[in-house]
Image 1: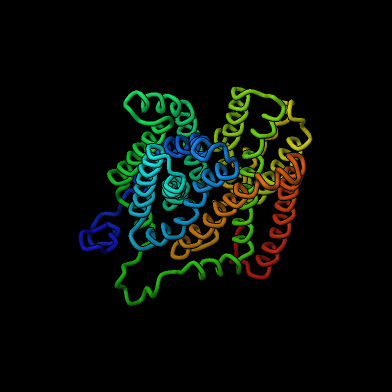
Image 2: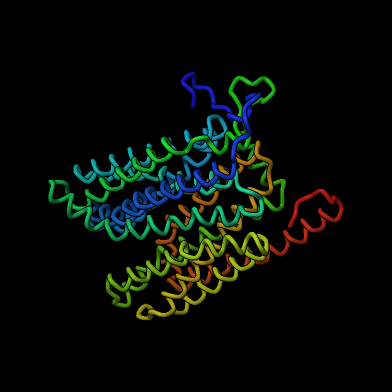
Length: 441
């Protein structure tokens, strides 16, 4: 952003300058986003791991309030998703991501203060702020696609998703150590994890601020000056939603992200409770979570290449099938069983990856650059918000329906995605037959 507050302009837009090497800029952009995503991933997981535990400790063992505190991470991410997209269309990706990571770091600092003062409301406020770091992490996949060739968008997005493996694994491993170090310097128990989270979000912000130059969205032509007479008012959330609802491929893309997120959160959040009822120890539950995370992130580069080669629609079919199979397998596994919950959560994580990578690629390819960022913001708002709702209601549903009942419902969501993909494919194919210049499958 310039010192006058105006959005920066693409250097190659000035007459007489040699054209930019966009391929080299894209490589630099990818390296930058991979590092920022890994750093932000550490901050996110360090917050996620300790929040429910700290809330349960502060509230004297109230499980419902603990669930609400943990869900604040998703609620905060949903709340800033569209405002971040507005910042991106006004000033570029760098300013938008910088905002998300700085708010995330501030939220972690407030959560640390909550740990010191043992204040539950302050903890929820801090975790809401930390959720902005999660929103920034998710937005990096779209930033990576701004300059990507259409035939490589799936792989580009998947590489950013894969970087989360590094951050999530590292955050899981060092969170306990960070808490121990925090106690050694006088912080309360679990306070060190929030200190680590705040520092890692700050590191991600610094990486973006220093290295995300030139801004990929500026070069792609997706940023307009505030004072341009011809540009008109910027796209509102209502207009972005209308664009999605009017386009069957976009409806499918957002619907697939919602199904993937709801199924993933719905199963993952309840499985530890189910295993605990069967007397399974914390170490076994931790390994189950590791299998789930590996399914979500580890194979994303392969999934991205498959998306580019065979298309988004077959991958969305696969996402629905994997979510259905994983949820159903987990549903029929007794509390003391291990194979079903391990493999069920792994398949659901894999289905989530299929769904998010293919749906993100489809959403990017459906709209021109001037409409794309606002639509991405609404899509992420819908995805993260639905996941937050699933997290908030999972405890009550578990009490009423049991682990098996909730997961059979999650399996049905996967079936809806399979049917929705098939129906959308037929609609889009019919549109292409009548308008040859239409959407490519």
